[in-house]
Length: 186
Figure 1: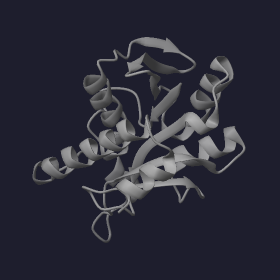
Figure 2: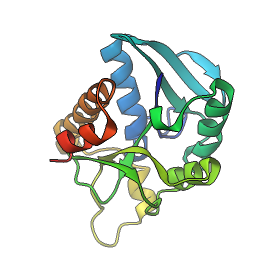
Figure 3: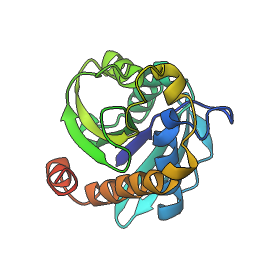
């Protein structure tokens, strides 16, 4: 079973913010695959279904970003899942809006959600899809930037980022993550 975790913050206040682009991708995957996300378990909202022959879980941690690892660990322990079948989707300041970067290991790079996952899993080796949100203009606080919404002029690029992420996730369901990186990092 593949388990896909999108990072974000719960609540309407954060729904359309840059920090919630991971949740946006999970919602888009939910629509694409016809998997309803409604079960509340393991400190997360979860939807399970099949895409072809592959069983898939779509997960939105409800712990707030900085504690995302709690939900990831709880899900992993409860379902006895394999870390190799885990993919995390999250916002990345160092990737341009409209682009997606895939990695299978590395540091948190200043991202508190990833820092929490590394802490709770005890490893930096897991599959990641970093969704570009670009850096703010000089002088703008990072926290204010990631917790603000996308500008109207950026909506097409936002949609492109989400779609590209969904395409990469769908490809990863039937290919290795290495093959997925080769195709989508190109």
